[in-house]
Length: 111
Image (cartoon, rainbow, N blue to C red):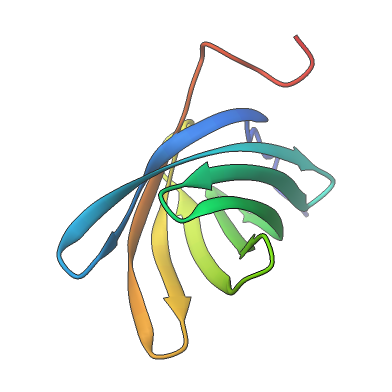
């Protein structure tokens, strides 16, 4: 039996950690039928998001690829913490670090 998932589509903002520093990022994410799609921007430039999410009882796991325009891609693996926070780890080759995103109640997709 699949658990009910209450992921909020809309604006998510937060940071990723690299080299002991935090770098801000902001993205618009849409969650539907187990898929994640979106786009955003950080200090390196604009990027697209594509991935999946899966719920097992109270745990919601997410995985997505963040692909910069005409550049590299970064794998993000995380889980929903509470109802409006995603936390996890990014990976690019041997490099990795933590990330955190929070949903912004000030904007939602389709409103």
